[in-house]
Amino acid sequence: MCRCDCGTEKVLSSSNLRVTVSCGCIRVTPIEERFWAKVKKSDGDGCWEWQGSISSNGYGQISSGVGGNRPFTTHRLSWELHFGPIPADLFVCHHCDNRKCVRPDHLFLGTVQDNYDDSAAKGRTWTMPRKTHCSRGHEYSLYQDRQVCWICRKAKEAERKNGASL
Image 1: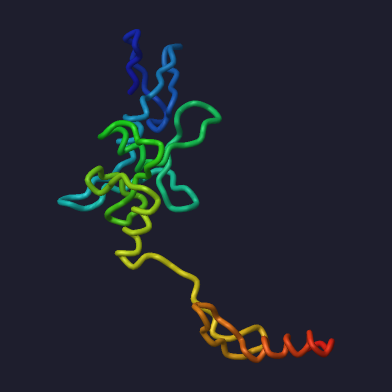
Image 2: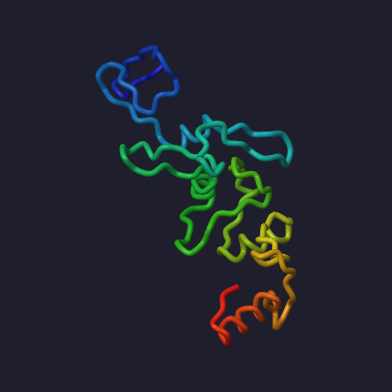
């Protein structure tokens, strides 16, 4: 049921509409109302999960309501609804590590380094494992904090001296 500002009531075919036309008037549903309609709150201290659209990197997203504009990420929108604007140099990070979570007390503001440190403290960082062998299959040695294949290095030195190739 939609009640227009002019007082006319009309049953709508979809309650999920952002813009509804009832008696001829246009009613735009505020983003806050659309946001809360898609949040599933859990009991206790659990996450409040976004039930709407999910981006390719796993974060909740919601349309700005203005055609052609980029969607908002829902954890950032939640922060702004509860605490106000986000400073340009900060990110909204998750204490809970759940990208769909929009619960304000599970979120915190931080720099790129803060986010990385939080991730590392929880064992979620990934670093490329060091190679143990060169492309020719020889084992690397560690020399002055660098991996060196002494066999290939000596062969290259000999090639430079003799003009021969490996």
